[in-house]
Length: 146
Image 1 (cartoon, rainbow, N blue to C red):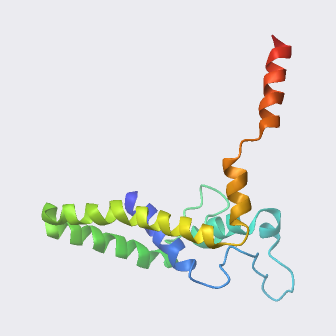
Image 2 (image 1 turned 180 degrees about the horizontal axis):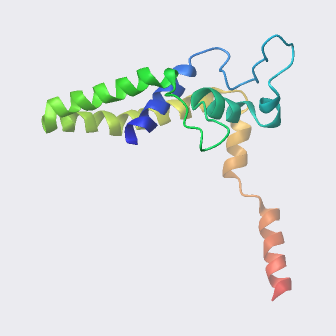
């Protein structure tokens, strides 16, 4: 099951490079100017996940065919597993350096980007400055209850 989850991640990541992303708006129905009625009942992201990514059927009894859009990501995951098995444990240390440090660099990059956005000063003030009124109301409630 691990490779299936990784295939979903690769598929989702590949779809995120489109502009606009496919889960931003409901798709139009065929030969009509309206949106898909099922998508209008939920959110576009939920519709994308269940109907376009997973191609989930209406009932659990319906097996369905393999999802063609997930075949390539699934094959890529198994190729990566094969490559890691061929290389063995001798390259594990180098992989760990990348897997540990890369998220740290990404988080620092997001933090720097956040500081450069308009209104960042106001957002940081809201985050850091404690709201004393809320603290007093909670304290007053606790005193009145006891």
